[in-house]
Length: 141
Image (tube, rainbow, N blue to C red; front, side, top):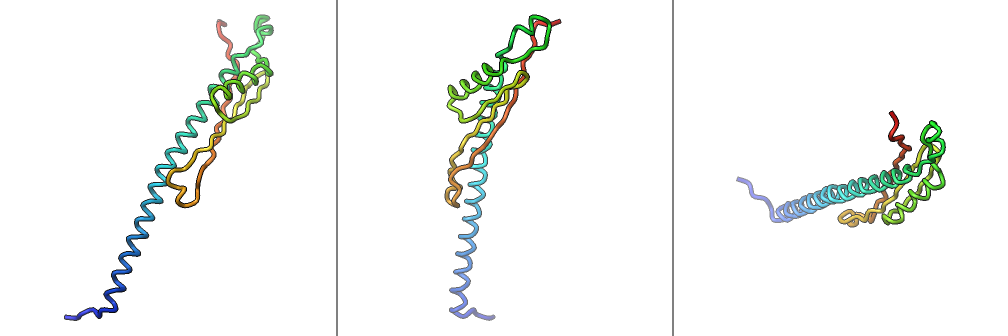
């Protein structure tokens, strides 16, 4: 039977403490990724919803003249862009809208503060979502 000298026993205890510290830090980092990753995903879904709704609101601004003459549905671009931007402001969203006679495109940006990843120096992430909408012809057979 061999015995471990006292000097080696202290080293063994220190290595277990270091292992435990590294394991706890790894678990905290994983928990941070899961928690804050979920928050970022939710922010992206919310931004996407706002962009889609703003684009749809803009796409309702149809120029009725060509439509009444049997032509295709066309947008009034200035009104469509203005309506989409108004929707964004009313929703408290940061974003931009552009419009042509055929399409309204909206981009929304959201900054999501981090909860646990601030421990490793990541205080926030910015997510972006873009959506487009086209005028819809209704009531045609």
